[in-house]
Length: 122
Image (cartoon, rainbow, N blue to C red):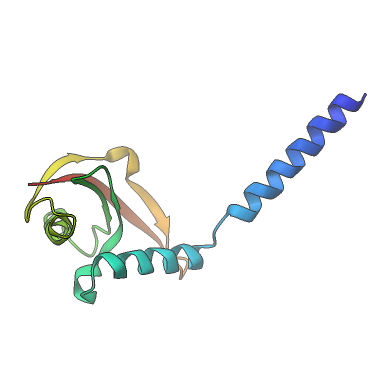
């Protein structure tokens, strides 16, 4: 009889821990904005960028807002990051990442499409 109670308690604890880790759309936007500001000091270079992750030493996963900037613009902005990590001054599109293509909720509650690509420094 105590095993179901233990399982229930463990499930409840895990659910509470997961709830504590969720981030509101507003906080997520604040976190993305801070990361982009570190990566792109020029505010104009942040326009249309959603988030950028380094993927290994010389690759980046770039998520961008296609209604604001083109894929080519998003990719070209990574050249500065390549230079910052000492991996060249140009980039090449390595692959489009359809599994990361999604709609995301902005801080204002608006749902927007986000596309993702992987680029390599050259």
